[in-house]
Length: 121
Image 1 (cartoon, rainbow, N blue to C red):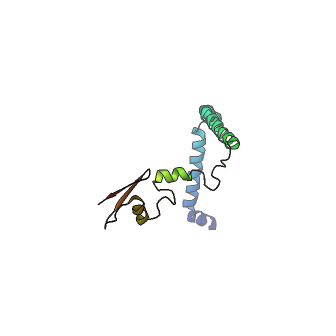
Image 2: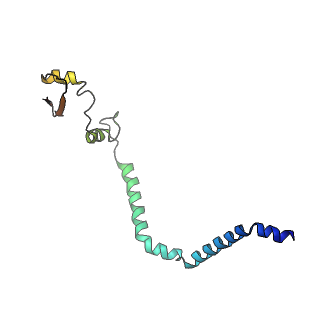
Image 3: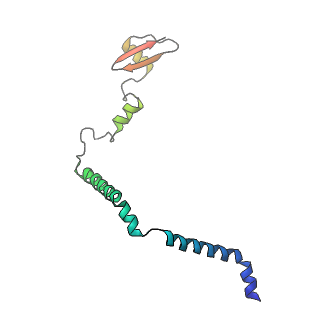
């Protein structure tokens, strides 16, 4: 009488295991064969492989830029896109106004475009 009592205690676990096993077998029965999937997706797989080979080849043959060795790759482009002036161009509002002979009122807006400074009151 001990075995049926233990089985009743784990009846939900056993039902869950049978249900999961049935679902796995049913999905394996309904799923297409691996070769069918490979035949359908072979152009995508080949083009992806060729693209990755091209990336590796271009990485190997592209010359290393020695023009600006301290600058990280793309840092200048990121500064341009972010709109930040290069370091050392304008140190402070006072220095910018002295360079362009502008008076600094309480509120000042400085627009920098190719060495031009416009002070708006």
